[in-house]
Length: 77
Image (tube, rainbow, N blue to C red; front, side, top):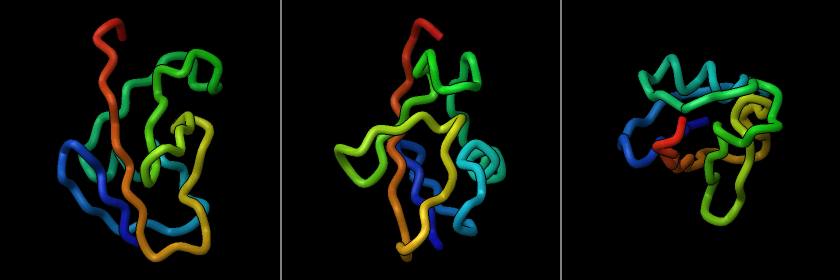
């Protein structure tokens, strides 16, 4: 599966079930983190428009050939 990271414009191959933070790190994309338990929402990203998840507790979904992950940078982190 192809993962497109925005706004970095980076594309990387990933396997379903692979942790999103590991995929991002392998692609050289930094996703801000905080608690690493999904509570603080510092790692919240948007997948395929209007679907927001915490990257620290999420993995690559199954059933798709590609997804787009849009990363928003919060200046307080």
